Amino acid sequence: MSRLPPAFFEQPVLALARALVGTTLVHVVDGVATGGRIVETEAYRGPEDLAAHSANGRRTARTEAMFGPPGHAYMFLLYGSSWAFNIVAGPRDAPHAVLVRAIEPTIGLDVMHARRVRSSARIAQGARDLTNGPGKLTMALGLDRSAYGLSCASDRLHLLAKSAGASGIAGARIGRSPRINIDYAGAWIDRPWRFYERGNPWVSVKPRD
DNA sequence: GAATAGATTGTCT
DNA sequence: GACAATCTATTCT
Image 1 (tube, rainbow, N blue to C red):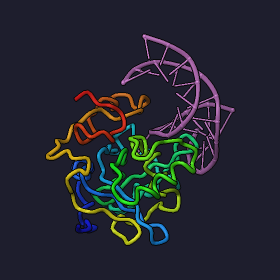
Image 2 (image 1 turned 180 degrees about the vertical axis):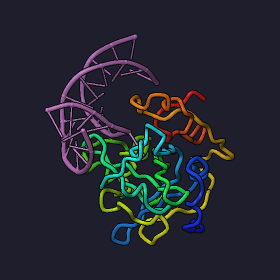
Image 3 (image 1 turned 45 degrees about the vertical axis):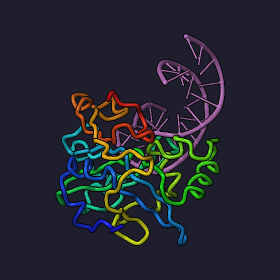
Image 4 (image 1 turned 120 degrees about the vertical axis):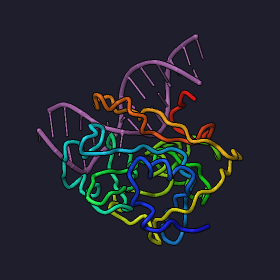
């Protein structure tokens, strides 16, 4: 499988969010790789998008990565205990990013399961809730604050070209829906900026197909 | 399967 | 001091 080059991430945020569905995210820790196919993403397009952390051009130490070059990781902490992983999109200098909400685990299943159990969840081997949520997949992959600003085209963190789902859903279509849990975003709540693989069991919140 | 409540901490006002 | 792009366990149908 081929690695996606840095130029891949220079596309507009909505196009990138859609293009990422079906690619494989890989994170290497101490020489051990874990990863999975991305099956659900959301686009955040500041400064006008009120759901984005960069809304109204808010630029702080926390959001700095969103203003940085495309293809780098923007990590943030949610509700005190969950990290979320985002990839900064183009164009350069625009504070746009794609949140990865769910993956279908394919690489290093044992390691991912061990990480999830260690952080208190009790889940069965092969259960859907291993990586079907933004905080869950970062726990499983070992992603946290230390990945902030990292390039997504590096040895430690990279993406592999689109592939068919291991769960046997051939030629799956990509669906769209409004984003999840952004009740504060006013008129932007209903924008269909969430992309997911139809019928894939690892998608986090059940969409209205 | 769906709805609900409690946990928990860096960041910003 | 309040909040947040969530997770987990519990309590129901």
